[in-house]
Image 1 (cartoon, rainbow, N blue to C red):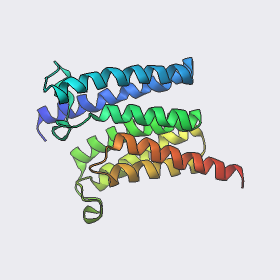
Image 2: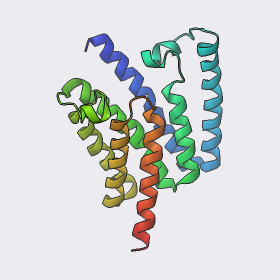
Image 3: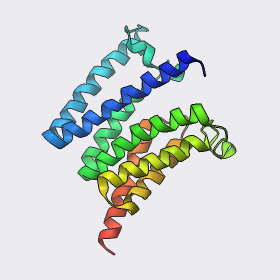
Image 4: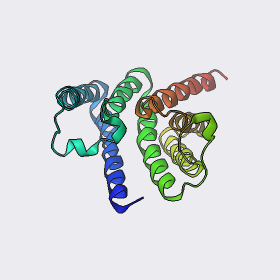
Length: 198
């Protein structure tokens, strides 16, 4: 990986850390307010993508943040915002926090560790992608720590971390920014319900 590619990857992934703001807005202002912020964000980026995709315009600065495969489709940030709206609407506050942060922090660590240290492919014939065992392992660990810090329950944290990592590793054409929060949030919430009835 060249230094230019590395800088681009770090810059692109660091933008995802804006998700911490989603958690902070939810925590300090409430569910309704964070949903309005996400809706305004979605409207803004959809307008940008309209000009980018429908009118073939290069929006200054923003056009540099898209991957090559996003050249003719919606950007990952739109799918992430949709995933965040879904988990905030459907799941408990803590599950939503964990799912949102796992999506960004887990993905960030998996991408950087995978690109620097990734040697072994994860079930290449099964998932048909180039994701590494090292990157996926790092993601699982980070996701578990995130879940443990937010939820305080190692079982729920491990279930969420497992499904977040599985979703991230398994998908190649479907956007992981939507799949990861939905799967980790759903199975985390189901685990909480099961444990409450044991």
